[in-house]
Length: 116
Image (cartoon, rainbow, N blue to C red; front, side):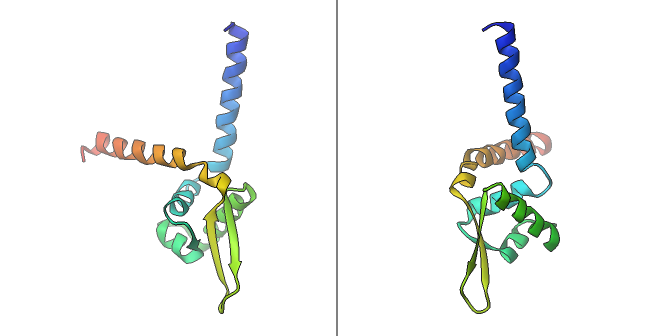
């Protein structure tokens, strides 16, 4: 591989990381995705309970962003009262290996730092 090809490939990879971080970055998105990763379908209040510290307004905003990026599907059920459920789309489920890698690294890091 020539130096120019290497530089071009490097820039493509950095751009891909940048694009990924645009979609997944922020304090809450990965936690929301992780909640939906462990549960097939979740109601808003259930996600709110899973993601400690997030406000109603912020959860609503983040779910809309994840929906726009086709990672989360919102379904309104015909019940009384109306029930809204969220789930990962098939495209969102492709993040499974990313989430699992974050879990493993996070556990290892906590052990490394705390010794526990």
